[in-house]
Amino acid sequence: MNLYIAIVKQIEEGLKELALDVAHETEPDALSKLRDHEVDVVLLTQRVTKDSIISTALSGSVFSFKTTRHVIPARPLYLNVPLSLLRNGKSINEANNALRHMLQRRHLKHVAAGSLLDGRRYEEDLYLFEE
Image (cartoon, rainbow, N blue to C red; front, side):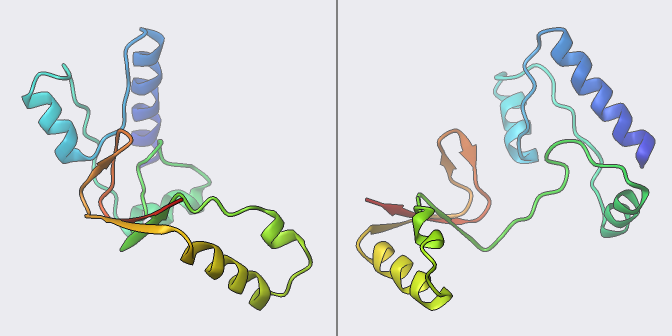
């Protein structure tokens, strides 16, 4: 797997040196863009397994950008929590209460999994905390 990772990185760096655009997409989005002639080429890397992740980590190597992703059931966005909330010597309970109060004043909008937001596809549900 380590040689494979090095080859993928070399391909990506070579494409960038040729001033070609390199983007990281989900497989369905990449194939859709290829079908719709929005891109000329799609490079699909092999799928990684838990065993390959563990062996790569133990070897000290790293995967190329966005090879491993953590998909969570729901992602909160636009929280914009001020650091002062954490720095004022408050207890964890006081900070949680202040955060809860701050978020309750915002409009909560649900966006379904698979949606495109700000040019990025999210595979999980989104919860937007809008002011």
